[in-house]
Length: 196
Picture 1 (cartoon, rainbow, N blue to C red):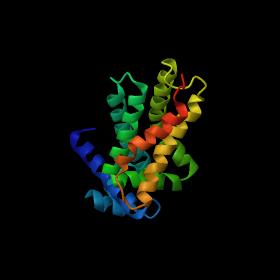
Picture 2 (picture 1 turned 45 degrees about the vertical axis):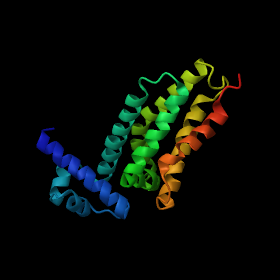
Picture 3 (picture 1 turned 60 degrees about the vertical axis):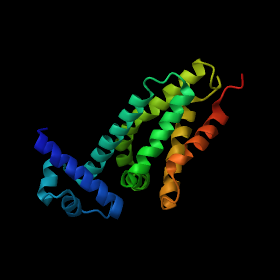
Picture 4 (picture 1 turned 90 degrees about the vertical axis):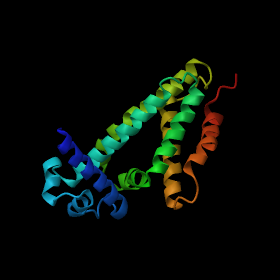
């Protein structure tokens, strides 16, 4: 994409994020997205065939950026406990600093149809694999229990953080999400730490 085309594309995604967060995906017309993005209605269709494609690309782009931050941040960390803490901190910090993204990922995704959720789910896979690899490292180093069901536990860890963000949104942001990192981590560690 040329830089001007890329700029319009990013404007459309940002406009869509704002509109989806404010009106909900199903009540968001393409015309509202175009207005929020500062482009003509027809311009949207130069980049996306349908509204569903905007939502899919929005998730792929934003989650891709987030997964990149996770990987970059844990790359040099050799302690699996510290790596889990870092993942949890970034998860909470990034979504707390962008409530519109948090709303769309936590609320709107759950109201989408199954096929749409499957397409978007692919963007989450690298994040789930990262958590799985941290768990495997902890098992190898005998920091975590040897009998862990890694695939189940990775989903439980992701699901707990996911639910914490949803509860924070529902509460109307009445507390700092990032302040929940230590309690979340101690909950994980209580269940997975080796007793040796």
